[in-house]
Amino acid sequence: MRLDRFLANLPHCSHRQARLLLASGRASVNGEKVCDGTHDVRIFDRIELDGKVLQAGKPARFFMLNKPAGCVSATADPQHPTVLDLLNEPDKDELHIAGRLDFNTTGLMIITNDGLWSRRLTQPESLLGKTYLVETEDPIDPICVDRFAQGLYFRFENLTTLPAELELLGSRQARLTLHEGRYHQVKRMFGHFNNKVTALHRERMGPLLLDPTLAPGQYRSLTQAEIAQI
Image 1 (spheres, rainbow, N blue to C red):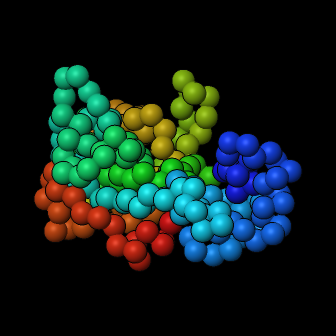
Image 2: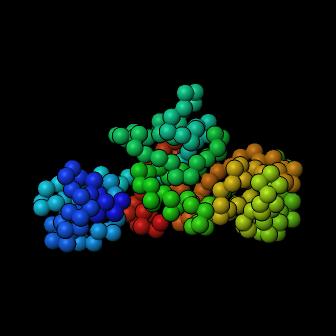
Image 3: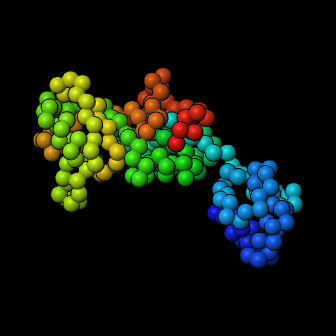
């Protein structure tokens, strides 16, 4: 929200009064005087007027989780454990998932309360690659490397996937990097060649790499350096 709108939402403060307050230098955000009404403020910011705290601000929280199989990428589920159940953190209801994984897909999952940050990580326009380790039921046809790089046509959605990088690691194993997130995309891409995906593990989202010290179900806070990469 813009700072002038935040102030105008206060009791007995009109839009005109908000502009006058800002022009007189009476408002501060995170300890810095702000006169520009277009300045964006979020729930994480401390906002003061004449030294009086209007919003104390909340700490932004960022977690990296190694999702196990058999766990739902949701904040609540009546039948199955969710990824939030794995977190021993206060106020978990304020957190959301940045980039979901299927029930039996494992690997890197990011959980945060910062919506702007998570959108930068997951929105299609960012084109941040998401890398998966894939195992298949049958040997992978080497032609998949070129076909994935060209993009595959999904008739149901009448679209062609963005170019994807496929690295063959074995007859039935590969590393696949996507730059979008279509519904069951990995399984559908290999299904195009009548090959069933038997295991899927996400190891990277953009510059964020799954910490190899995290066992399935374990998590840790992101470092400031990791947060700043997005």
